Structure formats: C-alpha cells, structure tokens
Length: 111
Length: 124
Image: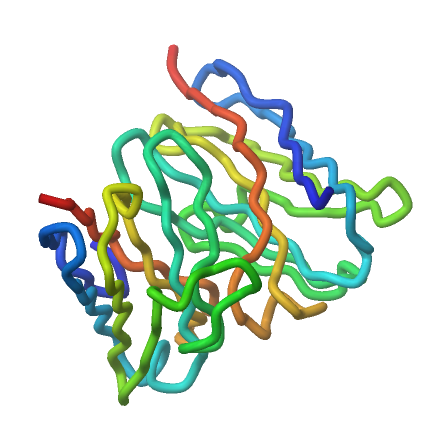
C-alpha cells in the first residue's frame, strides 16, 4: 500500500488530455514539493516535473503539474502514442519514517 | 554526458549479503545528494535510501533499516549500497538516482538522473 494514492490507470484518445491525481496528507504533499516521473516500458524513470509545477529542460509543455493542499495533479495534453507509460508522483514525507515516498503509479493508455 | 551506471547485482541466497555500486560521470558528483530506489518485478517505485553530499546525513526506508547501509566515495565519484541479511522481498531492480538541485537528501525536489538499474534476486 503506497503512501501516495494514484489511480491505477487512465486512458484517452490521441490528441486528448488526461489528468493523473496524487493524493497524500499534510506530512507529505501538504508540506513538501511534488515531482512526477514517466517510466516507459523497460526503461528507467524520467523526471517530468519537479517542485510541483516546474519542467526540466527538454520536457515539452504538454506536461504540466499542479498542487493544492494535500493533492497534486499531472496533466498531459495533446496525448501521443509515445506517452503510453507508467507515471509516478513522489515527495518527501515528514512522518516518523521520514523519507521519499512514491505513489503506486498510473498506467496511461492511448486508445 | 551525465550518466549513472549501477553494478553488483545478482542471485543471492536469503540471509546473505551483496554490495551494489553506482559510478557517476558527467557532473560534479560531490555537489549532490544521491538515492537508491528499487522496483520489484511488476511493481511500483520504492525509495530505499538517500545520502547527502558529504555523507553527513543518511536515511533509510523502514523495510531496509538496520540491514542496508548507503555510502559514497566522492573521490571516486561512486555511490554504494551494502545489503545484509537479504530477504526474498528485497528482490528488485535497484536504481541509483541523482537528487535534483540539492546537496542534502533531506531537501527533496526530485531525482533528475537515473541509472539503468541492477537486478538483485534473493532466492534459495
């Protein structure tokens, strides 16, 4: 059971938009930065979003991040077949077992 | 080219030990905190451990605390994970990852460089 809760899967047609939610608590998302990762099949995770809503160099602006309270959201617009992947949210958790926590991952399927 | 290359994985019996290494290149290694993250077959990401730039701060997931030890050698641009008392549930692909824009693993902003991973299988 992951500390952060994500939907197992989302899907949409090419060109459409999807959003992926990441729900946590005040000990993690509520008081820390959220990052998002894309993991294509058979590859290592890739940083898409850091500090809630910032994109590293080279990440297209089709990917966006936001945070409100104890939840965060990743948005992908103009969906492409190459976006089919698993997506994970991550943040720091200030609880007794302090450390980085990840969501369980969301599989994005392009219909 | 910024790169992380893990090594040291393999098949090991329960209760035995293994030491993973991660060789860094293309960036100033001792400026950044580093992490180990694992992924069990067909499962999601699990943070294992983190270490700050001068090794002063280290942290561990509860699942490995007391059994695993993270360390780094800045002179050799290398990160290590000593894994003792291995269990079947430690079977996973182990990634090393560079902290984004932080010298302390306690200040998390993300992980921007990942290795390809090294596989650890714990089985008799």
